[in-house]
Length: 67
View 1 (cartoon, rainbow, N blue to C red):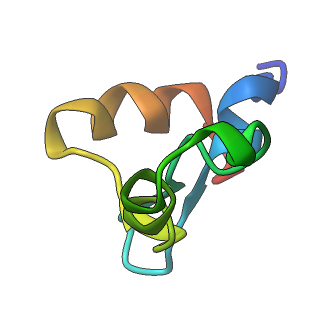
View 2 (cartoon, rainbow, N blue to C red):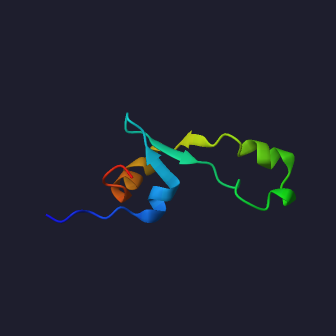
């Protein structure tokens, strides 16, 4: 049986924790920050959140070896 390929886009966006949860980084914090309000910038400040339970199965399928 050949090895499965990890989806590179998913690997860059998500990581798996030891307990099997899917960790993600919030969006809208990379660039164009001068045009955004304080509120927008503050809401994206918490970098580590967890992916929604409904998406977890799909993400884990994209990262067969845990990313």
